Length: 610
Image (cartoon, rainbow, N blue to C red):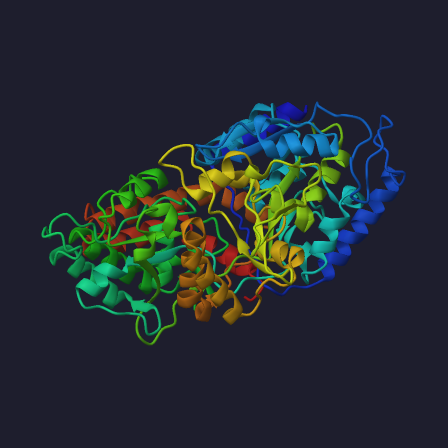
C-alpha cells in the first residue's frame, strides 16, 4: 500500500512542481511553537519511549551522550547530495569517524546536486527510497504532500531524542511555525541560525576593478551601481579594450547563467536590480515589490526589466550563452580571465587566480532607490527528513541531533576540530580520538585564546582545477550538509567566544585574512567586499509558508504550466526571438488565461504581512 501510494503521488509530482519556500523573517508568532510542543508531548505519551529504548531493546541516547546507541547499527540508509569532485560518502573520513563515535554505520546513496531536482520525485515514486534524507532540498509543498500521505513521518514524537535541536529552535522566536504543516505535524527538521552575520548572503555582482580603473570608473564611494551605470560600464567593456591587451574584441562584459543554480543566477540578481525580491521563493514569477506580493510578469516594472535585458543581450554586453550554460561552464569562462563582470556567490570559485581583482557592487534600480541585498534565513525547513521505511527513527533523531551542537557541526566542513597557537604554531586536537591533522584546517588562537581565523594555507589540491571548497568537501559532506543544522556564525561564536562580532571587528578580521595570503585571502576578500557593498541594504524575503489543501491542489494543477510559459517567453523576449513591443500584450493575455490572478492571490493570502 505504501509503495502504491507513493507511486500515485509521484505521478502528480513529476508533472508539476510543488510550491514552497525556505526562508524566513526574524520575527514570528510563538503560538505555533506551543501547538507543536503540545503535539510532541501527546505523541511522546502515546509512544511511551521515556526509557530511551528502541522497540527491540536497543538503548538510545536522549542527552547527546556517545555512543548514541548501545549496539552497532549498520542497516540504516541515507540519501545525501554531493559535488562532482566529492569522495564517495561511504568512504569519507567524516562518516567513518562518526560511525565509530555513534555506533551508527549509514549506508549512503550519493546523488549529484545538479541531478536532484529531476530525480527526487522519481526516487520517492519508485517506493525504493532511503530511511532519511539529509539536506536534499524539499519545498514546503513536497514536505506537506509527502508527509500527509505517510511517506515522511512526523518528527515531533521524537523530539526527546533531539534536545540540542530543540534548544537551538527555542532561541528563535516563532521558529516552529516554519516546520509545522497545516495538519499540525513536523515532517522535517530545520536549519537554525540564531546569529546572523553582518553581510548579506547570496548572489553578488563581481566586477573587475582593473578594468574599471583602465576606463576611469570608480564606484568605491558607496559600492553601488545603478542599472543605467551598469549599462554604461558594460558598453565600455565591450568597445574600449578594458583589459588593456590591445584587443577590444575579446572581452565578455558580463557572464553567468539563467538557470536556478544557487551560485550563478543572473535572472534572480537582475530582477532584484529592478526591485523584485524573490528571496525565499522557489517560483520563477512571484516576488515582493515595495514589500507587496506580486505576480512579477504582470507588473509594468517587469516590462522595463525585459527591455533592459534585451538591450544588454542584443548589444553583446551579456554572454550569449547565458540560457544554455551551467555553473561548471560559467566557472570555466571565469578562469580564462576575460570576463569583466559576473553574477556569482564568491569570486574565488569563479576566477581562482585573479579573484582579488574583482570588487562587489550592489545594483540599484536608479539613484533614488536602495539596492536589494538579502540575508540568510534564521530558520529553513526541510533539512532532515525521516521516511516511513526507517526502522529506528529514534536513532536517526539522536544521530542528527549531534550536529545541532557547534563542536560537531563545525566538523561537517572544517573538521576535525583543532586549534593552532598563533605564535608557536602548536596544534591542539579537540575532536575526540583524532590524531591526523591533515583532515582539516586549524582555528588560529592568539596568546589569550581568542579566535583569530581559520588557517587553510596548507591545503593540498588533488588537481590544478580544485578550489579550496573542493578540498573541504572531498572528505566531508560539505556540498550536501554544511549549514543544514546550525548557521556558521552561531557555530563559531559558541566555539570561540572571542571571535569578532561587531561590523568593525569582522571587517578588520577579514583584512587580516587577506594579509595572510593563500587560501585565507580567498575568504577574506569575499567577506570584506560583501560587507562593504551589501551590509547597508540587507532585507529579508518571502517567509516560509504552507498552503491549504485547496491552494496546493490549484498549484499542483497550474503552477508549472504558468512558470514554464513565463520562463520560455522571457528567454525569447530577451534574446530577441520575440519582439517585446509586438508580443507583450499577447503574453499578458495568455498569462491571464492560465490563471495569473489566481496564482498571485494564493501567495497574497498566505503572506503574513498581507
